[in-house]
Image 1 (cartoon, rainbow, N blue to C red):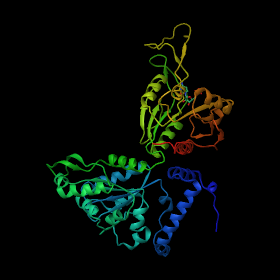
Image 2: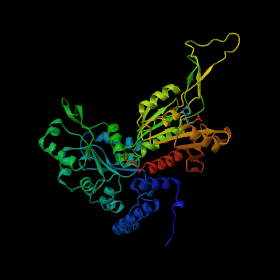
Image 3: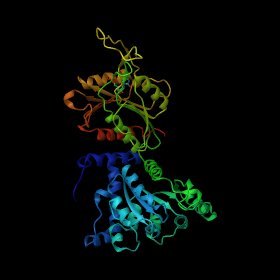
Image 4: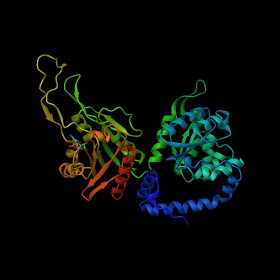
Length: 466
Ligand code: C5P
């Protein structure tokens, strides 16, 4: 039998394994054993179908099966079904791989071709279609998902779910799944208010099914208004992502992260600034949110989009950053990745300083040290306080001194000499400095540094009560 060690796996896979292991309280090796055991059990139950697939049916793309978040989107038969096509894109924008199942009624409103083209995989429609059953099968559709979303969830589909019907592919998947289910009801307000619908919804809620919407407003039918409009695709996608993240290794943890440079005004048009791009801090915020943390990112001026799922507070100066950081506390973990200006002009001129005679002398005054302020708090100190040390000389020696002086728990030290290309670049080489010693990480993308750090954070606070 072939032997494989975890070390031989690629970095992304290792990272996912470590996160899974931390979340389940197992060693990485035990996690791998658990996964292999369940894959072997799956393989047994699907051996027959797999043989038939080899004999002719199209194989399932394995890359798609390993996508980060797998959503099965069940499209029910209502006028709001056209919005579900937009929902496919919104879920994909948030990193989900989407598989679509259309009910027979849904196909009156949208075609499987349109849904499949947007999803990048053909849409599934028929419980008794031999090709679908050999490709994936309704049980696999139900299992190979992290979340099932039903949008629109019609009154009829809700009734079938509540009573455990399984007479078509959509209801069979819903009955067969042990994954979380999110429904986006959409129907006429009178149908929504109907006693039978409300009874069915109470049953679904008791079964652990989550709802998004319906919203109040105009109906598709002329002159009809009330509660029954399907939630907007962006709302449904946000609710889906929140449910997916609720299972993450940092679910229920509050994290505070600073990022970017600060910009210290000299007059209304001039500032003292630095070359920080914010890429590393923003990547950490995104990775923390993807691991389920409730993240506040306090950012100086950067040319980056806000990371999805993160509450971003935009500031300019170090003083504003300190105020925003203190407002964002308490937090379980605080990571200070911002390149805060050490000094600011002592006087800020109210009007543009004119050029006459000799150049002005600019007096500077020290800015508050935000990391040190938070790390030395007597009460309400985050359990884990992490700083960065961007150095050009004696990187590790300076980082060790900084760890003590600033009172933080960990420092990520990096060499930012111009030759490294780290400042503003996409890659980073960091050393993790803690009281226990120094660990040098291989050169990697800033995204990978972020994920490795988040994985370490999740493991470090796994024992602390949420
Ligand atoms: O002292 P130095 O700027 O090298 O320290 C770097 C670390 O301290 C970084 O984590 C940075 O975000 C933080 N820092 C801060 N407030 C300052 C200066 C640095 O939070 N005024």
